[in-house]
Image 1 (cartoon, helix red, strand yellow):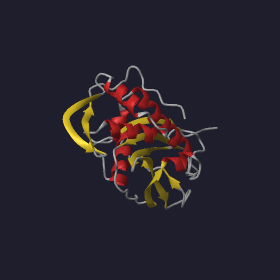
Image 2 (tube, helix red, strand yellow):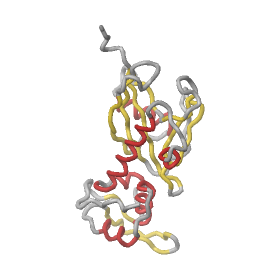
Image 3 (cartoon, one colour):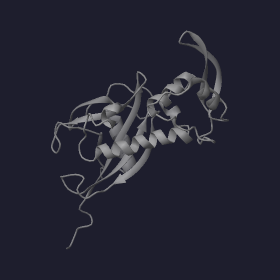
Image 4 (cartoon, one colour):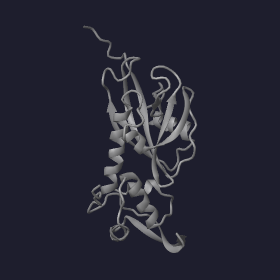
Length: 229
């Protein structure tokens, strides 16, 4: 059978994570057009002729959140199952975006609404997503959780200056498990180059707490292993 090798579209889909009130949230849009009208989905769009997939991801991120600066963006993987989109052959490049305390989103032109959903609602199956977006969401979430073990990615959820308690809250929100405060403080401050003291102090829960900023090290040795559930 003759097949046109150029008869497919390329898209970019975003798994945007932020922490709101100490709970990890994911940005979802309610689809306003077919297919899957009325269902919740990851934000994204088709790659335009003058764009590459990364440019599309940044454009969609700006349209939905109004934010591009200060956002950690990395490619997760490519999804290319022939039947993943009923409109035709659509290959999508998935991206993970992380930023601290993002504001209220705005829906794009083909969406009814956009809102932040607790990650647990999607992970538990209480909220179903359109297309293969549950799989994309799951892969990106596990990427974020795993990278907290061996990289400084957690600081992408923090403001430029933060306390150790604020950083611990990031780990607890992303991993979904409590972290022992004393053990955490010892490991974080004992890892050379992970965080650096600013010399400033703030009140955190009524007690003075030292402020830190991200250090120059991007990989943690030894890794900071997730606690068991």
